[in-house]
Length: 296
Image (tube, rainbow, N blue to C red):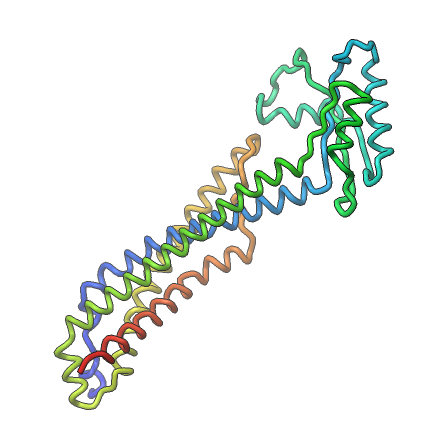
C-alpha cells in the first residue's frame, strides 16, 4: 500500500496518449529505411557475384571496314584472341534464345526483333585474381576484328555499386535521424512529466525517496509506451514489406530489385521495438537523473 501511494500517476499524462503513436510512426519509417538498406545490400551482392570476372564482346554481323570477312570467320577470330589471352578461362558465343532473353525486359515478351541489326555476343570469363588488361584486349580485338567492342562489366558495375552504396548510406542516415528524433521525443515527454509532477516528486523526496526511484518509474513508463508503439510500427512495416514483395513478384519480367528478406533480416526487424524501447528507457533514466541532480 505504501509503495502504491508513492507511485507517480504517469499513465494519466498526455505522453501516455501521443507517445506510442509517435514512436509507431518513427519505428515504421526506420524499419522501412532499414529494409531499403538490406535490399540494396542484397542487390549489390547479387550483382557482384553474378558479374565478377566476366565481360561481354560485341561482334557486328558484318565487317564495317568492308573487308568481306564472313560472320563465322569474325567470331572464330575473336574467340581465338580471347582464349589466347592470359587469364581468360572461357569464351563462348551466346545462342539466339539467350540474346532474346537479354533484350526481352526492354522490348517485351514476344517482340519481333528479327530485323534489328543485333551484334553477336561472346560471353567471356576470366580469373578475377589475374584479370587481363581489358583495355589492351579491347584494342587487340578491334584491330583483328574491326567494329568489335569489349563491354567490361566491372566498370558500369562499379558505378551501380556506388549508387547502391549511396542509397544504403542515405537509408542509414534516415534511420539515425529517426533515432535522434525518437530520443528527443522521449526527452521532451520525460521533462514534461517531471514538470507536471514536480509537487509529487518533491513530496517523495521529503519522505525519503531517492532520485533513482523516481527515474525507475519514468524509465518503466517509457519502456511500456515505446514498446507498445514499436510493436505497432514494426507490424505495419512488415505488412508493407509483404505487400511490396507481392507487387514485385508480379514484375518478374522487369529488372526490379527483389524485396525478399532472409531469416536474419526478419529477426532484426522483430527486435527493433526492443532496441527502441531500451534506448527510450535509458534516455528517460538519464534525463530524470540529470534534471533532478540539478535541483537544489
